[in-house]
Image (cartoon, rainbow, N blue to C red):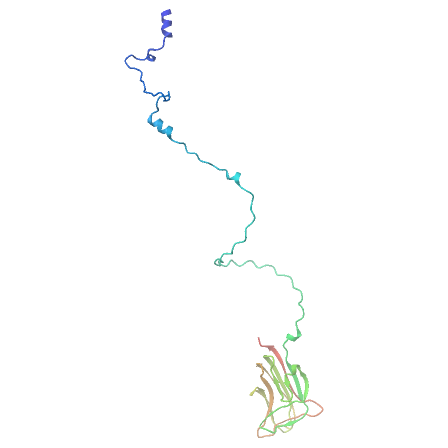
Length: 243
């Protein structure tokens, strides 16, 4: 029993070097390290220098916010986009305040009304009718010496002529626009005198003339009046200025 216990205490036979395989010996110099030489793979790994990367935390190096720079040059305008859809009609707004009165000098006006107190017999083939009484003559647009209205405000005008005929004599007048007759006023000879009237609207340009002339034919041509009453009148006014 004691012999068996001693055998168990002895090291295994595998740990004792076999006499048939000598222990390898390495050649060393006196200055070599006592460690055994490294294998080629281990030596390559030992000679390899590890890569070192520096990582800088930029949040630590961030400085304070600088001042705002100058505004840059505006770029070119882009292409216009398509029109959008029409929006919903909004509610009707409230009535605005009354505006200030306009300048009276800018209001375009022109009107006249003249009459004649003397009777007249035609002496020439054509004879202008001259008037001697002024009722209205805004801006002096009607020339009393020539018996003509001169247009200073282009536009549409209304004209009217009233006369009293003479017994047993013909009455024949033309309402003239420049040198062209526009309408006539006529009454045949009669034993009774009557009032005759003619009206017309004419478009006038600057410096146009409107006047009345008597037209004499084979018969006597005359219009009646007296010094007391006015039987002969010529009227005109601007209806609408030219736009």
